[in-house]
Image (cartoon, rainbow, N blue to C red; front, top):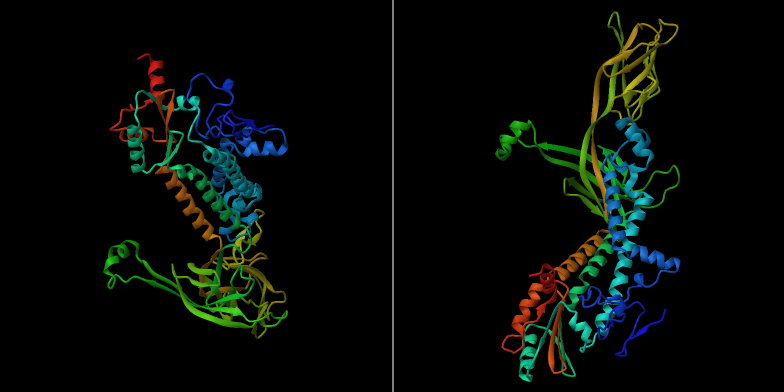
Length: 541
């Protein structure tokens, strides 16, 4: 495809509608009489409207379409809505294949099978985000490059057809040089950049506002890039960490380099006698929490340890973690997000059901339960099975929902000197089952020991600065395009007459008001708005 040379001598890329230099319509057959010119992209040659033969051309043309970009955004929004119907995998404590069917039935199972449980980390969701970014890049390049070249190449003297077919245009007779000097002075007062060649004048201001939408695109691309970087390991961490009092746990996503010890969890409530401000709230709610706090110690691993060797830790610092007061280190922040009171141990008494005689005490530590508890004198208790979070499954068999002792249940085997065969007993909270008939002995509940467990959120966001940068650039583009506009005024001498034409990318009312000020104190008439004149003619007024 060959370039097109205009009669003014300027060589234009193939597909150019208006000569970049003089503004002449290069293909009059495509124009419709005296209709106004489409000045949106200065009639420049856009690649998407010029080339369509190769595979690359077709891809370029597809992504350069604004409609395609809008549809990609709509599809991504609909997909995002699907990801909010049920909790995402990162917010559940059970295996995903168990949790969704257990909590939401067939719908939850379908939700999991379709992959919506990890929607925002799925390959197809990331592909949608990438396609939006590609669309923004190609849309911007397809328009901004030819627009920049056209505006840079424009001459002061423009073709007659270009001036006549501007929206604001007028012809004046008998104008002297003093009027032109006055106009030039008024233009400079209005902060126009004035260029004069061969007695013709071009006044321009606010060209930078034309780049506002493309600055928006740059900000959005950076914003999307920040979102995609969050899926690269190490760039974004948002993990839950539960640490019992007295326990030391590895901080997730740190490569086992950092450890956190929970010395004590503190829960404080407001006192209605001391805190009068909260008196009504305390009376209504009963208790109002004043402070959630965990006294912790942060450790760092000193060196690599051999398998089976005790890890060597170095104390980094002590800290009182409270809500909105996290402990920060090495780009990570650990927030106090929750707490729970968890069963630590349960105590039973081995008793005779008929005589209520006691033969010993069994204290089961859930963190380290023993297999056999010897009570002496021939009495012993064996744990045959342990269900930390007991429930009956679909088949009516006992099972556990999790490894956390929320609802513990045991299958005991009780041996006694007066019984040849041990007795079997299934014991849960408020429930005892003797599967092989009535037993002589039972495990009577005596009491429980609890412990506080602090819930932390471990966060690290190395992509946050990209979101901030993208947001700032986007707002610069919004302000740039919204509060300024590109205005141009052409004043040229043609056949003893003075022609005045003007164009703006928006706010035509403001441009016409400004023309009144610029042409004041001169013999030049205010040019007419040809679009309004066409509307009047069509209505027959």
